[in-house]
Length: 104
Image (tube, helix red, strand yellow):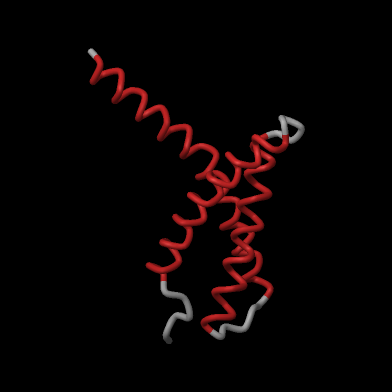
């Protein structure tokens, strides 16, 4: 049985979604003036981007959307939000550590 999903493409899409989520959240943080917590904003943005990407992928590939695929897309949305929230902070810490070691 052939898989309807190309996993290398999906992993690439998830990486792009994480980067897009980071960029959009950074821009929206400036516009919301701290009215909305950043983590909630990240989850909302990640979920919206992931669901749009999921439905676009299914439309392009001609895949029939089933309920469990939508549930899986929501789970992936939470994973994208988690990676965007905590991955960016860890990346920033690593860059700061490398800069401080280089300055010494």
